[in-house]
Length: 214
Image 1: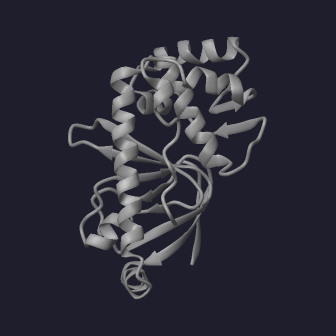
Image 2 (image 1 turned 60 degrees about the vertical axis):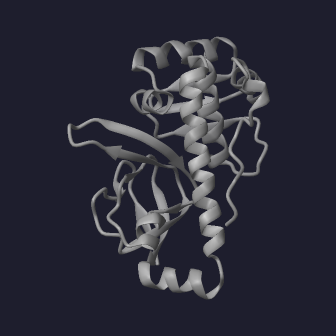
Image 3 (image 1 turned 90 degrees about the vertical axis):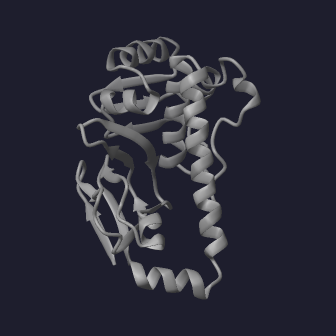
């Protein structure tokens, strides 16, 4: 059954039982891990077509991360046992494993970027990933990204909020983006891609992770 989640609401809570998962059909969400001391670690952004909470459902474990709606989100709620039967009956276990592997590769690539690439390059890549989630398969000239705070962008790029402000200033000056409160408008995709492909070894690596089979 479909369910709507207001902006900034918790869609799946860390530590809860995997009684169900969500198939995101509309909106943008973030996945974070909350440490015992209160620190928050950014893990991923998710968009339409992504499954949320499938690992705990498939393995019968407690949720190890929290999913928060960045914008108003709509998702189909899938009960755990019915989902497991559906996957097994249709022989989709390998597809699910391939998706999990793709997400691990995405995480590894992100960690490598944090260690090797300049701030503005990481920032440009993060924005391009958000564009891909917001308008998958499209080639829009202008994309409006909403619901993001500078603190969340800082978490996703592994820098301070002040560093994000400086990076956005460079992107604005180049004509790649415009910014407002919780809004980034990508105005020139090619300029943003140029920023994203600078840095040591960047040109040799894929800009965006290959979408997992669905």
